[in-house]
Length: 325
Image 1 (cartoon, helix red, strand yellow):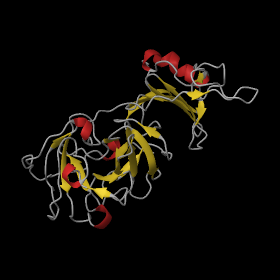
Image 2 (cartoon, rainbow, N blue to C red; image 1 turned 135 degrees about the horizontal axis):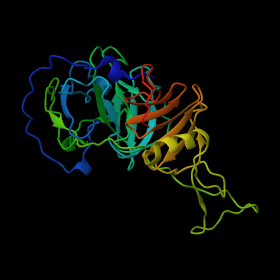
Image 3 (cartoon, helix red, strand yellow; image 1 turned 90 degrees about the vertical axis):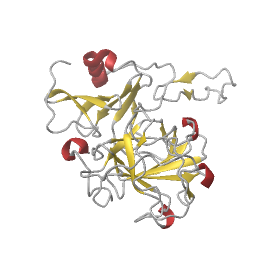
């Protein structure tokens, strides 16, 4: 994984002059789909419904860029709380991931992203959680333009694509209703639309019930003892080994443990531990204890403590040791 924002920088230059925001009905935020960018990001549609590559199963897809020209490497955020029905591996194919909302009414598919890590089927995500970064021009199937392709699917099924419009059986895009009337490349160069999403950490760990008692019976409802994720009965979350080193150096930045250590469900061999402020993890491949709050990362490397930002979960090769942590 690489820090694509640092390496490639600006994705889009010479953007066409913006047009005025089209007349549209404004909806409450809870009844619309937030944009996949951080708070206040100014977003423009560069390819609309029924235009260019948006045909067939993708007829109601939208291609989105940031109007400041810094789309490449920009953080891509989950549009709502929910689960992952499916996702490509980081850097694979067209870099797509589907997020199914908690109420399971709609799912949003986001493409041309270099995902931060493998996402497991059924994994929970929180609104605003960083999923990855926009791929640089020519990467993850973006045809030479750094952008996010976004679709709205009924029930999270890609075969049931709908426009971002209440009148067409969908939901507005960040408060803006974008109906389909049959025009070619409809809503292209529309906007800008300001994002109401906000960068957030991963969802809190779900406490798991204790295993059945020795006699084979399960405690009655209301009497179940809850055990933090990764903990054995009677064990409480605490930092040890490399995670204790992280706590000693980062202090309140790291927060307190909310789970015991647990193995990466993806089978990488890494060990993970959630905290009140983010995620601590030990990388088996590099023997590196690392912590991230979802935006900033810290790691204890053979060269010393390093700090960086961006999509990469591993320290950039050019990272300079930080002595004041």
